[in-house]
Length: 243
Image (cartoon, rainbow, N blue to C red; front, side, top):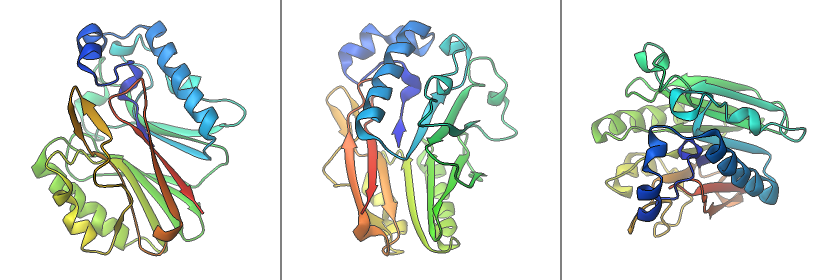
């Protein structure tokens, strides 16, 4: 799973933020093509079965109306879904600059999936994928607002409780106040797979652990998590391997 930062080619360094600040307002197709090429190279090297993305653009005023996901599909990854990340009633779904802002996945095989929603926040989309019988994967992008995250974390806590079998939950959790925000989940015996001292986000010299993998205890011994730098984003990617 990776937060792609809409593939603007900004790696989180101050130099990139200064040099490419204009890409937050308009990112050319050529700049996106370079970032897409870097992403595809990582996918080819790591060879995952499923790739989950947040902050991918299917065409907005910011992105020269380029559908980034179309450039990810090939014979190896023919199955996919992409959906606007904003709530069903949000005006941002139709506003020119934000209507393409999405989450998505691509897969080698066809997987049963559902689009679910947070009850609170601006970014609402939660994906639920059935990887195998008794094994469910969720991924989402959480709010930047602490009070909203509290409600969202309570919702996924109940969602995991209500899901039969084992669960893996991936996301940009945006836990800006640290791992203590995950205490309600970990009290449910859910297992944090990240190393607590391994940051996944950078802004200049500031580094934080925001991109998280948690899972139910029955599957945890089989889960290996690697953090992979993404040169086109200020977030690292999470590579989950099941033994």
